Image 1 (spheres, rainbow, N blue to C red):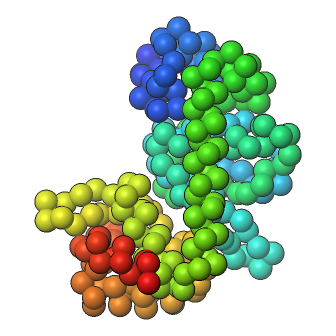
Image 2 (image 1 turned 90 degrees about the vertical axis):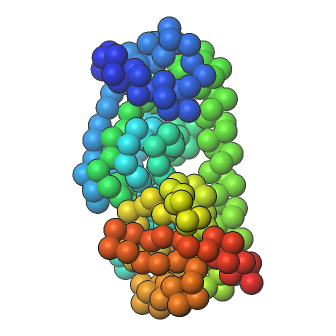
Length: 232
């Protein structure tokens, strides 16, 4: 159970819970628990019962659809403050996708029974949940649009632009360092191509002066140019 002041402070800093007053936050915390996941650890599989909602305190999580051949399609990457696992609690159906930690990740977990009590009594959480679902639908709509209308180069450029806007760290020179633990294989699973194709396109983007590859990640050096590439 969550009763310590440090954990309550962490919850209050998460936008999903930010609208709650201290008393409501205490009530919510009484029915929650924390869980940490190692990098690469599966949080839940597609088809699992939906028994809890997760909120990311730290780390990064990928939501994906695995295939029978072992490949996967990555639908989204989530960061601190993001919520996942809520859909199965709303309709009672099994998990519609899998979730795994991309880095050491800490979550707070709201079990199904407490979830229904909370959304019935705490309007702040209910509103935040609706906003989270709306955001998820928008992300999926954008993902389908890119897969249907953009070529592979455009899809990769669009994904990198989105990563820059969602969690990038701006540099003094106008560059943006992507804060993500995605590998080239993960990027390939997001845009629907092979890892080799991603490697080739990243090399081309580097030659074009759009980004640079460093040991610890990707730095976008020309966000405007990369955005233009995503719209071709």
